[in-house]
Image (cartoon, rainbow, N blue to C red; front, side, top):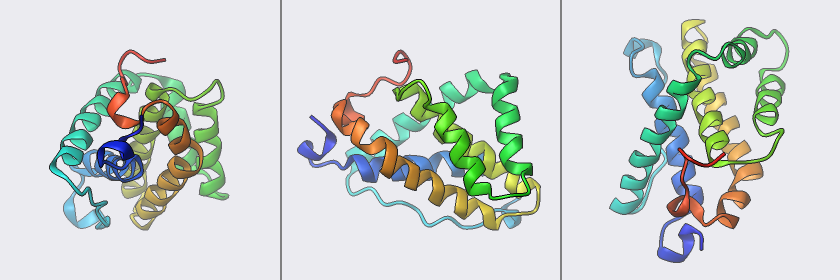
Length: 163
């Protein structure tokens, strides 16, 4: 049963989680360089706690990816591309899920979005951070949300051990 059955929204939690991951990655950047992101609202204290716990899981998985050169190259490739950054981002997102959707891969995509946001601020393109947030939320809603619901929602997830 997905979160909706217990009063929580998988969509709302996912959107808030993406926003939190990006904000967490940007926290060490100079405040004047970081654009304000419209915060995704959760409705209950339980949803807020869920987003916080999931954020910790995403950071654990992201820390595992930190030394992965292929990961770094993918993030750098999107940040430095001269063509459509959306097309490049979408290509990276599709690559993350080319062997299927898992909880860990969902976390990896959210982490990629956070790292990409940092690269955009470093490149003096802070306006791109809002685009990255939008792209990630759109990808989540269009390609991942149904899978999350089919697998019991965020409440049933296990990001660390699922592959």
